[in-house]
Length: 424
Image (cartoon, rainbow, N blue to C red; front, side, top):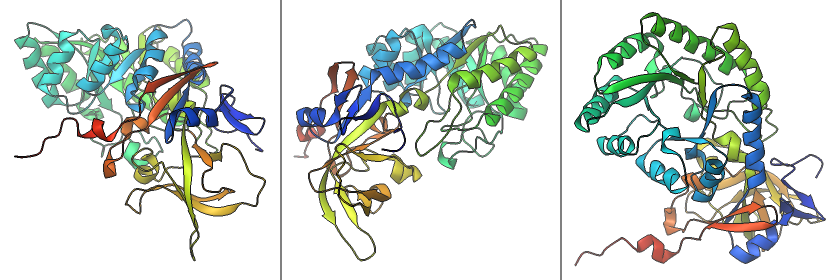
């Protein structure tokens, strides 16, 4: 290969075999079958270290946004590294606690929290609720009072900043469903401060995902700090400032800023505004796990056509939904490259949908039975996987040096129908 693969150096060729942390992916596929997700622990910790370097000497809490990948083995890596967690459901809360998370380091985001989810989170004493509407403020106040508690809240503000990313993963514009409008923020904080069941502790902002430029972050920080000025001038103290996540990764020659370099610039702006010693929170997800994972899949059939040639694989849109959902690009690499001439093919899955494609117009030399790796598959793949076409979800393996841990068993048909009943 002429250029390093996404995930390099942890994902790389050795002796013409694609490996993860030096372990041949073909051997893992032979042991566990395909489709198979494989993750590099070293890659995850290296990505986390960039944030830790960026925040050295500061009061900061890194909260992994677990919607990117909620597998228990992955959560355990970040819990053991001292991370907090950003969650968006009661199910995610149960997962992080099972993985060893400290409840006081958990932030509950999301626009549609139910009363039951609020009670669950209050009962285990999570660190903060990121509230996203005035209606949610009122309901959370009622729930907290019914439990004899005060809920710690941070209000998610919508700064109307364009993150310059795919519209489905943009969250900080006026037309998005997230957060409180910039011009309504002060009044919302004043209402929150007046409610006896709430305790205002911070402010939150998250403008989107797969952001590859630094300008949107700098613009959003300015707008958030303007709000902090106004809120505190009104007599409401904010103990922490949460700048969310959203930093992108390399899918197709993308060049996002390194986390430590980005935060060097953001912290300089924070210092210049007089907020450099505040407690800071960030919620990275994709940037910690995206390039740490691959999906190994087998070529089932080659199907030449008049207009298109197809390589049909055993992974599908239920395993790897990003191409179908976002027209996303994932690099596809053979586990053992052939010396044969390449053919332009669409790499597609077996699901009964024309949208079930994994890669379009790829130059590949493959034969049935060959194994391919879909790269940059650590984020928003397994966490969004489904049972569409009654397909079982794939197995997952976490590689840690010379060890390979099976962290999710392949889902069987029996697993899928276990809780369903026929009507008598």
